[in-house]
Length: 117
Image (tube, rainbow, N blue to C red; front, side):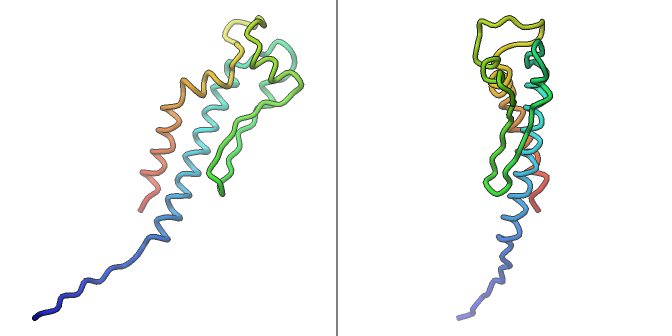
């Protein structure tokens, strides 16, 4: 009986590392995009709400966040009774999170496709 051998080179660790780095890049693109969309429609009547917007990524946990700071950020976001300048609105973070979901997922997917060996 003839024995046949196959040599296998395991690249799993390298691929896992590349995949994680690509996912983090995609996540960064996505949260930056969300921040831009939210800032574009955030209320500007009282103070500098749009200037407080931050986008952050925790690469270890692969989580991202967009935040607005200020005493009135939550009130402006949640109160649908407030009147805003044209093009500005309540739900300035929630609305683009919903409408831009596919675009943001696409950004992560693009980086994963580009980043894998």
